Length: 230
Image 1: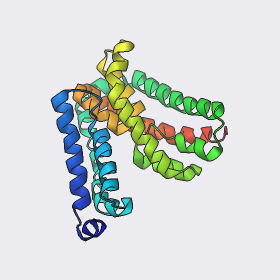
Image 2: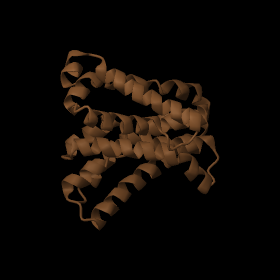
Image 3: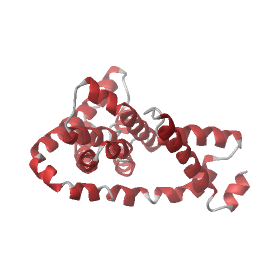
């Protein structure tokens, strides 16, 4: 099977798309937030690679082409933001304050857990960029001396959890304003969470897309400061 994947330029792409589409189908059919397509795809691909005895490096060699689409897909989030520019202007101060609060809370939580569980510096800085996009998180982790593979894992897990729990959290805290919903999801759960925000509405999707960029920039700067605490 390793040789088959090596000889095929699209085998990794095909299995990834098939697994993701299975997740999309299950979510639409059962309408359960737990059936997040990214989570389902991971739950299908990992056992499949183990069962077929396919090395991850071999799989990644073919599947990497999907990663090339991550940046343009993220940039496309600017389109709904442009369409909701008036809502942005009207709520600019509240949005920025909310995003800043979210970023600060995330970093303070990591600092608190690091002190509580006595993390060493390397593990601590590895977790600091957990709530920003993978591309930015990898750069922050590398610059601060973190473990990049663990950073990527925590970013993905954070996004999936945010995607799944967003609706429940909004109900518990009675958050109903679409701008607040979008800013919260984008700040806490980056692109994976934003996919849920887009489903909620145009305003939510636009504000979440904005929050991804602003929260990412804030985290890049703040993480360098927080890295000095441990």
